Image: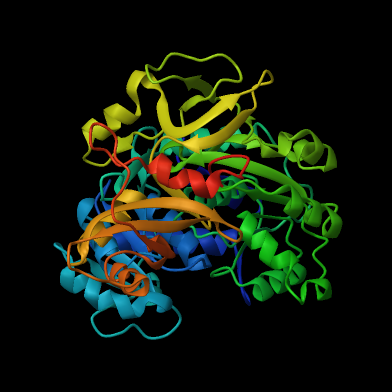
Length: 519
């Protein structure tokens, strides 16, 4: 099966039903498929061959949806660019997987020329928007007007569909290769665990679509023939207005977004009663936030999803039954959940031997949604998938009913506001500061973002620096959300006998009063 199949089915069953809603613009399946087929033809005329990568740097919109489907329809591979990255990070990802075509919307035009100028293979730039294209860029809408629709390439199975870049544990992001089969298996796994929504049930997409969780949600709802409502980015007032206006049925958020909405001074003004389902991930929901949500949105059902880019998004789920007063009371709300249909999970020790229930070890996952591998990184792929199991790098335990609880991370990763931050990337930026001799980056608890990036630094003899100076220096090299929020200076860092920095010793004072060592 391939990822454009739902379009063909919907076109034959209800071609004139509304499928995309972006602000005041609505399009039917007939219109969507026509535009997707024209975009596919335009990309082919611009040189896209089967398996070639096409990138997009843009916020959520109906255009972004067309870009994903049009790239697949034309036989290409999606490379959705992280909109929070700096130009050097974007260029690295484009060069790494040889992306020669890049779509850019109005929000990121200021970065376009720097990307083209610094890329090893300057991409052909396409402007996505209603206005005229800037000089040196092609117009997305003009390309669609000038190009005839083409037949679906129907790539499938192990054909590459998507490359998503995750943070680099060794300082550089890795491209996670997801096939059509990986994505389709993820959809079937999720659909086996839920009933189709009845009647008109729009799904709201606010989480960025370059993320695996958002892309997975979009495709699940496409299979279920649900209308898609796109908002460019998280802005609480616009989100509440959109939910009320469009009678939104379900959405995907991170807990910090939900907290902002519930505590917004204008929250009582809006009717959000149409909202019946919310999937969240990246961090657990606190009992206090759950109680607040149950009080103000009593008909809203919550599901937590746990997974990773390497598993093509969430594959472990904690359902609505545990997001209740009873779930808060018995602690089941803290669980990441149980493996979805078609997914197996194990908890193992350092030798990959399975440990007894209740004993903490590394979480391993197995299923057809696990990635093909990392782009051009066979050794990393073999290490991550050794023994046929995806090694998540998360430490946890499984109870007698198969619920998985996460307690720590094996790898040095921080999750801040739903974004993965790998300490090695941040430490690489810190190392380029002339006053820094040694650094260690850790995650510390944060009330709003779950975890905050904290840098512990040893300065070179005779050197001086201020925390704000260090943070501003990092912004030149990495995205703002990866930069330290706080900086601590020390005379020395704790080292093991082998000379390795003991990050657990650095983290423990911050987490000693917490129930778990991650948020």
